[in-house]
Image (cartoon, rainbow, N blue to C red; front, top):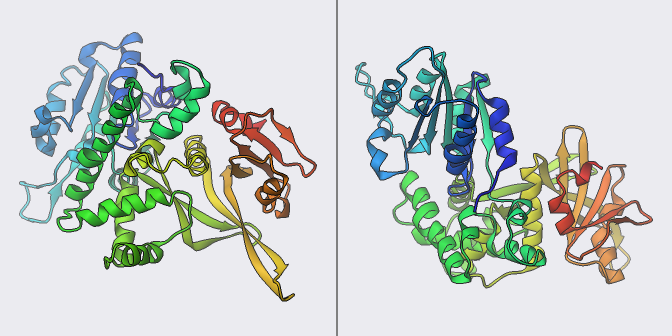
Amino acid sequence: MQYERKQYMDQLIRKKDNGRVKVITGLRRSGKSYLLFNLYRTYLLRTGISEDQIIALALDEIDNAKYRNPFELNKYIKERMTERSKRYYVFIDEIQFVTEVQNPYVNDPNEMITFIDVVLGLMKIPNADIYVTGSNSKMLSTDILTQFRDRGDEIRVNPLSFAEVCENYQGDKRGAWRDYYTYGGMPRVWAMESHEERSRYLRDLFDRTYIRDVLERHQIKNNHEVLEILLNVLASGTGSLTNPSRLSNTFASERQMKVSPDTINTYIGYFAEAYLIQKAERYDIKGRKYIRTPVKYYYTDPGLRNARLGFRQLEETHLMENILYNDLIRRGYDVDVGVIEQNVQDENGKKIRKQLEVDFVVNRGSERYYIQSALSIEDPEKKEQEIASLVRIPDSFRKVVVVRDYIKPWVDENGIQYIGIEDFLLDEDILSR
């Protein structure tokens, strides 16, 4: 089953031969390698590029392990660039596997040669167009894009969106949403048919790929259980406000384990670096400032989130919020959790401040939208609860409630628009209309 990955192909095609290194990032097994080695390679061949002009190397394959040495990698690539009159397209997959080695040409034992030195050297070759992929955001975003300054372009690849899954979905399209919020968008999942195959694959991804990567990269030897439990706690609390201190208390009260907030914060950082989770900051809409804590964490893929919990907590309301967040990020928006204060009276008549939440404050350039995610608004009382924060926002930016129900989009007397989740996810430009 082939997916066009049009969003990312368009970016690669636009950036072809632009003199900059193309850094393709994202969660492992989300389709980066397929995008580059299959889809983009096919495009190059169709446009007249010959096979010998494409130099491709996947560093996560055991057969290519020796090229994880930067000197061997550099030698391999340059030996294949035999003609100055030809343009060469260099693909290096999972570049974070390149090890650091001591520079043998200087006496300083602290001077190391890394993959950055290899890529910088290749960029000096005028007839080379360089593409690298990687699955660690800190390494790639910090090291490559900082050191290359204005010479690097990042292309972030996400798991399949709901719209992409629907392109090839077999059977009643109404079943696509249920399957998507259950199994997510890891491409290989959609080549499988049974729940057993899909669940086993997603669980194995955690055990054999993601957790192993974190343990090996950060040389964690004793806290394997803490990592596992923390992933489960974050999965169970998808869309809930939390912080490292609260999570530390959860370990103490529910697991009788003493884990410091600093350790938890560090491990969450590792998960974010590996693109497993994303953090949404809280934003005070009236005060126009960020609130440091607590925050929300969302899984990059809902199927992976569900696999952490053995597919036992399939709460559609939380999964819908998670999917909506992911899709807004994929579309290039900056997404925060909104907070708006309301002055109310308690049972004794005393004035108190109450914080109301806006699920998402969505920004891109001059655009801003306020979005609530709601499973249903059929009950009038439920509807009032969902829009209580939106009607109190003192500006004219568009306000939207995305609902699970199959509805025709409509606007109420407050100017709030209501859209069904499937229509929202299938229409890329629905917010700009």
